[in-house]
Structure formats: C-alpha cells, structure tokens
Length: 266
Image (cartoon, rainbow, N blue to C red; front, top):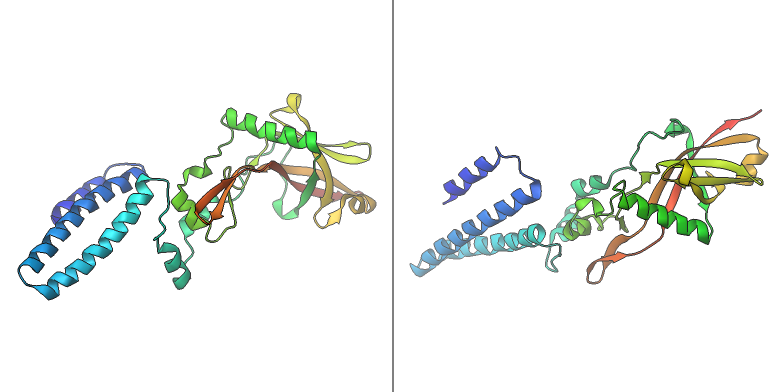
C-alpha cells in the first residue's frame, strides 16, 4: 500500500500542477493510507498484539488529526479551532516565512515622472478632505474594474491569513500597495496639491502635502528646499484581522502614501 502511494507521489512530481491542487491530491491519497493504517491497527488489536496495536493506534490518531487539518486547509476557506500550528510556532519561536514573504514590498513599477534613489526619499503625509477621499475610493474601484489592481488577498486562504496574522495586526486585500498609473504634485495658492488618476486627462486632486519626513511642509519651504513627488501608492481598503471567531473582514477607506524627493535651492 505504501509503495503504491509512494509511486503515485513520484509520478505527480513529473506533472506541473498548481500547488493547492497537488495538495488536494496528496490529501486524498493520505486518506487511503489512513484507512490502511486503521485496518492494520484493528488486526493487531483483534489478534491480541496489544503493545504494537496501541502504538499503531496512537500513530493513526495523530495522522488522522493532521489529515483533518490538511482537509480544512486544502478544501475549505475556514480555520480549525483545534489547530495547534500557531502554538507550535510560538513555542519553537518559528516565523512562517512563506506567508510572511508572500505579501512582499509595495509593487514597484517605473514611475512615468522619473526614477529617484529610494535612499534619498522621505515619506510624505497627505491630508485629504471628504470630496478628495471620495475620489480616492472611486479611483481604487476603477483600478479594480480594469484589472490593474487585485483585492483577493493574493489568493491566500483564511488558514494562510490566520498564520500571517499571528505576526501582523492586519492584512490588506490589495497587499502593501501599488503604484498609481498617474500622479503629480502642483503648487496652488501656497500649497502642494497632489493629483492622481488613471491618466492625466482624468486626474483630480487627492489631497495636500502637509508633512515631509518629520518636518511640516512649512518648515521645508522655510529652509529653501525644493521637493518633488517621487512616487504615490494606493494602499488600504478592505482588510482582514483576527477576531474571537477566526479571521474577520473589515472595510476601510483607501489611502495614498507618498514618497518625496528633495533638492536644496541655495
């Protein structure tokens, strides 16, 4: 029986199958192996071989538990209340690397307004009023509709999200952020107003820069420093976090995060 399962495992190794589908196949094969283990255990106990029978029974129960977890993971989007994986990670101080790396950094497309050395840029704070915030949410909806943005939590199941949420307060549906198709900063009435949109023709104001790094924009201007908008990312939106009954989804406004470059004018 085990030779048969091992042969199938080897055959599957030559086929290019999506990981989750392959996991489901392995889970079904493991179920067949579990039935075989249960039969062998029964035969040992029925014939009076109590020591070996009880040992096999313990092994069968443990394997059945992990088979149950795999079934929940590969065939549903739910999590199990008796999953000991987070406890094992905590005790052994293990960080689940594949899930932690899945989200990754912000998507770094090449901005149309040029490339700046990221080591020489600073985060900028954008303050938006109600109409500007409404347009940001509308822009996000347009990006999703046109397939330029995905809000599927990078294809992760709730089980996978639960593992990541052991180390993160929340996971956004669109990931860490994506570069906007068009963005620009314009000086208007003594303010630095940021425009964004699908393109320049449909761009609208999305807020005013009020802070660069740890300084307010007034202090930056007073120091005779010229600033440039290096990048603008769309972030936020719906997200998931841990609740008392598992992974919960919450709604929130989309935001725009800025990277600012500067140059002394004197």
